[in-house]
Length: 61
Image (tube, rainbow, N blue to C red; front, side):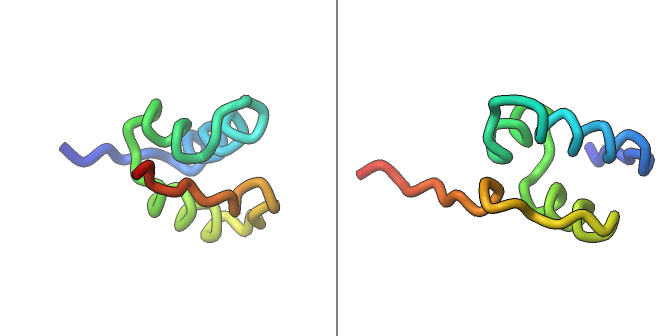
């Protein structure tokens, strides 16, 4: 099911992620949204990515 969020809700999600100890991936999983949606909305709102946003999660082999 698709969830529609307001700009204020997205702003709160982004703010909460930035003030938490969670990675973007973990925060998105907790909020049940895709990381691509998170980054797309963050870009749309004109927010820049910090260097901590650019951490890659490598697969475990």
